[in-house]
Image 1 (cartoon, rainbow, N blue to C red):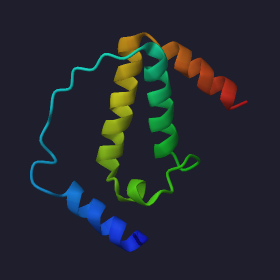
Image 2 (cartoon, rainbow, N blue to C red):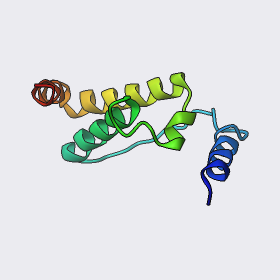
Image 3 (spheres, rainbow, N blue to C red):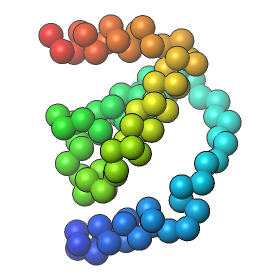
Length: 93
């Protein structure tokens, strides 16, 4: 599938009826998975990360912010916020 066709499919899916409706998701996962998920979300949404993929170019800023907020909330609920911050500080050195 060419990139243009894939982009069109994603754009169509993202703007289809009901996509902006809120859903409640009750998720139970281990702390390791929460930490990895947060790292993947953050890395994908930054310019330095893999944010150059065609799908992520289509993500509106407010949706990217919502993903970041979700990742942060997962960290807080798992008690990993401080650990994540220390890991970021280590990786930036």
